[in-house]
Amino acid sequence: MNNKKLLVLAGDGIGPECVQQALRVVDWFGRNRSLAFDIEEDLVGGAAYDVHGTSLADTTMQKAVDADAILFGSVGGPKWDGVPRDLRPENGLLRLRKRLDLFANLRPATVFPALAEASSLKTELVSGLDIMIIRELTGGVYFGEPKEITTLPDGSKRAVDSQIYTTREIARTARVAFDLARQRGNKVCSVEKSNVMETGVLWREVVSEIHRDEYPDINLSHMLADACAMQLLRAPKQFEIIVTDNLFGDMLSDEAAMLTGSIGMLPSASLGAPDAQGRRPALYEPCHGSAPDIAGQGIANPLAEILSFAMLLRYSFDLVGEAVLIETAVERVLDAGLRTGDIMQPGKTKVSTGAMGDAVLAQLDALAA
Ligand code: NAD
Image 1: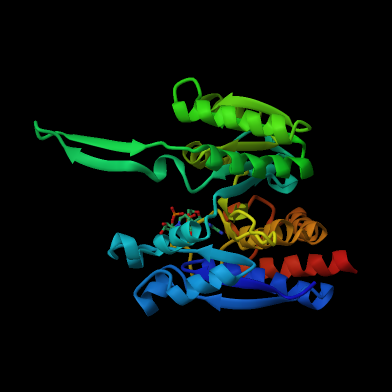
Image 2: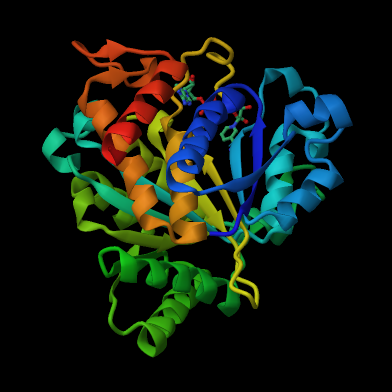
């Protein structure tokens, strides 16, 4: 493989600590699998604000545009609470999503068998759970105009958010779900509120058309978002892939995350549209934030970041075997009883961020032997 360009944006709080462990895994593939990346590291979030007065410098944005994939840590923290909204750490990530048009957010909710007991649901309901939630990320009610609060003649106020979707926005998100279903379970559940929302009616119509015309081999079902919220708690293993809009995806992916028992274990991918050469902008990051309460103590769980690199290999470079290798190494580390504080259970061995990284590398060595 030619060297691929990887932009690493570690960010704030526990971001750099977790990214450091993921980069050891990147390095392992370079040494053991001749899988070399041209790695550039740069600042984002509060770390960038402290140096450049903005959460994402223009030069960094250009590197992001030029990169084959971005490995992201996390941004934000109380240090920057007083910073104006458009310069805030989180804004750097929002600008990246917008500029690269990262419209499809993939969030797996996977329960490693060794952690099934950490879920708030009964073990048998979640053990072996492996759902993928695909959330439309750049449209819908978070971005629709008008979006405003106005003062009425009587002095009271009126707030408006506009939920807007076009055929194109729905179709491209549906295609991501159907393409993925061909590699994974062959089953998609499309979720909206077509009983009370016009955007829901269009969502269902467009998903159905794309399915009929392009993916008739996939098993497609439709579900109302409120019913899906219930079914995720009642019988989560009925789902393989859920595809939904920005607002419902926000809620449902957080709900699914809680089924797994730990935010420190969950990776994610945000994908854009492929260009004429098939090159697709993509950003990979853990679902957790910068965890300022534990930053700098060497106790953060680096597995979500390491698993984000596995997603990067799988979705940006089609290196499925390599991704599975990382996922298997993580599973074995957990089976061996090693835990960071966030996933600690009675009778297990509590380890630091670095020791968790050591253990993943040791398992990779063992698997490769
Ligand atoms: P958080 O995910 O940072 O932390 C929530 C809780 O989970 C904390 O108690 C934290 O210690 C724990 N936790 C999270 N990740 C962990 C890990 N890898 N290992 C061990 N424990 C972990 O969410 P929050 O506290 O709501 O937000 C903190 C900051 O992060 C805020 O500034 C927020 O804006 C930002 N944030 C950033 C992103 C992002 O970069 N994409 C996402 C969410 C929140």
